[in-house]
Image (tube, rainbow, N blue to C red; front, side, top):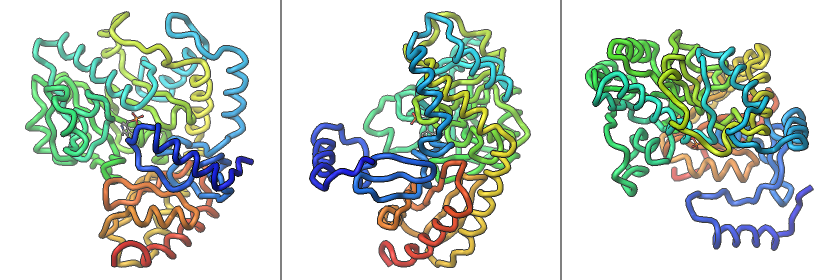
Length: 402
Ligand SMILES: Cc1ncc(COP(=O)(O)O)c(C=O)c1O
């Protein structure tokens, strides 16, 4: 299936180079199809997928239940728009609320859109409480998206500089710095956005004390605590929601990535206090929460919230961290992570290791220049972990500048 000749592969790469806007650094192969933990290129080579489309394919590739949900719903109703009630969206919202702190859900189509919506909701809640209550606090190393609003919350000079002016009234504190955060959060703050476990920033977990102090400070000043669980939510860390590791709940939580099972979906979960402020016409989206993606998300949510699945994520995460820690190389500085959200901090740039991974049949991600990031499908097994460790053992000391 999907085996192309070399000239067909070249043709695809040429068309891509000529006609697709160059915003991505592409891997050197053309992907054709996937099954379970493996992706295949057009030459028939298989790659163990330890990236899951950046934390998206939680159930692996071509999961039969997801395929069946897409097919059945496509034959029933593909699109209706949000002027009409549809059962899949209502059922999904009820299921998300039953499984979380939330009372209401707003659906959208991506992570950036989820944060964008959360910004609007926070601003409206803030203004309703007191004029000028519009400041948003976020943290260094965080990543919240690339739209003008979500980019304004992403403290990365390289991403922000070409696009200024961004959304105003944002202040940053160092991640896990309680004192600095407490200084910033005051009466004018309408929301604090934080990833409980930073993904793009290098797999850095918040300390429980830090999140507790943010919760306290938000309560004191009537600001919303917004958890961006776009990457770390939905079973990735061995609990359904990352916030469960910390014993505190947010007022708002943003989701995307794994939620749509590979189809585009984002969501903002919120308490009734937030929902009460939002009225018809305040926000909206043509495609959001469409019938197909909602039906697929229901499958994802049921499967990743299953206690057996979460126990599997914990067991595989522990095995992976233990086996990675056993790789003895002066190039590895640290192995860290929670569940199946794992970072290997190297003492040099990791780009050459990712290239070497491709040559050895494994897909790896980076998180910043020096951290290799592992976000396998949650269905990863011992066999694939041993294969990965074997490959890493082979490439870790023979790749990149010495
Ligand atoms: C924590 C976090 N928030 C937001 C986003 C943006 O999501 P999207 O790429 O779907 O806009 C990402 C994407 O990597 C993310 O990891």
